[in-house]
Length: 122
Image (cartoon, rainbow, N blue to C red; front, side):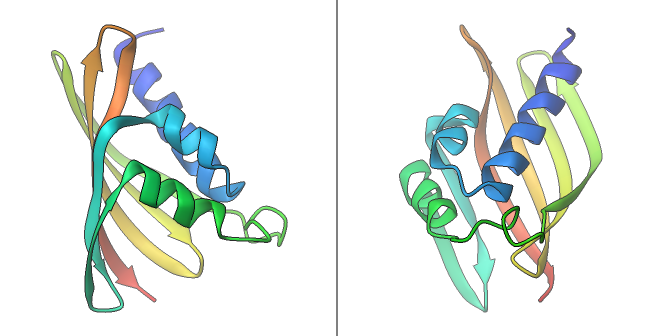
C-alpha cells in the first residue's frame, strides 16, 4: 500500500469514528498531541484529541444507528515526503464541514496531527 492509500484509509477510519460514535477509533487516527480547531455556531473551538473523542462518543445514538451516516468526499490529498494535507467535505450531525487534515509520517506510519474545520452550512 502506498502513502496516499494509507492516508485515505485513515480518513475512512476518521469518518467511521464519527459515524459510529467510537472514541477509540478517534484515538487510532489522531496523534496524541493533535488539535481540532474551528468555529462552530460562531464560537471558536480548540479541542485536544481527548476532547474530540469525548465529543464523538457523546453522540448517542450514533449517526449510523439513526441511519444518518456521515457522508464524505475527499476533495484533495497531497503527499510531500513525510507530510500530507487532505481536504474532506463531510456531513455530520446535520452540518456540512470542510475539513483540512494535516498528516505526519512517524515511525509507526501516518497519523493525523491537525484538523481545521470550516462550517459550510448548518
